[in-house]
Length: 99
Image 1 (tube, rainbow, N blue to C red):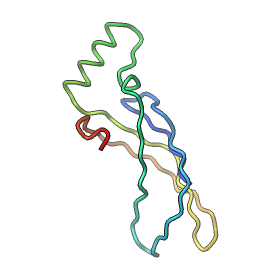
Image 2: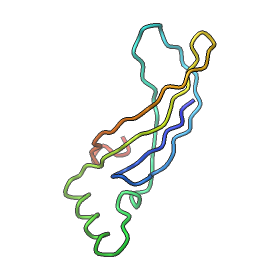
Image 3: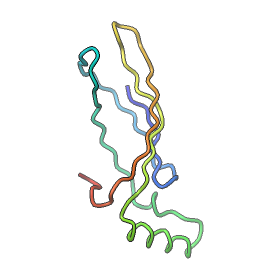
Image 4: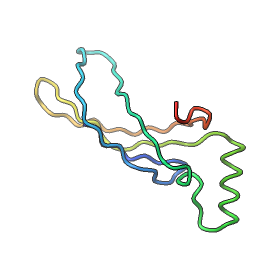
């Protein structure tokens, strides 16, 4: 099971909860496909109008958003449940949004 909190530019954007079963070979790296979406207002939300305009201009000129993922992925190894912590930050291009 996947339970990950999503932050965009330091603001909480949502939570990913997903159940799936996949086979993983022993001693192999693996990836879990996760699809996320959230409203653009989460990235641009500010306390007042001048800050909102600043946030919009910043997002449009930088064309990148800092995405942070925090949570855990639950797996079973030999039938024993294990929780793997997830802490990852990356810059996401706005041009890649929705792809």
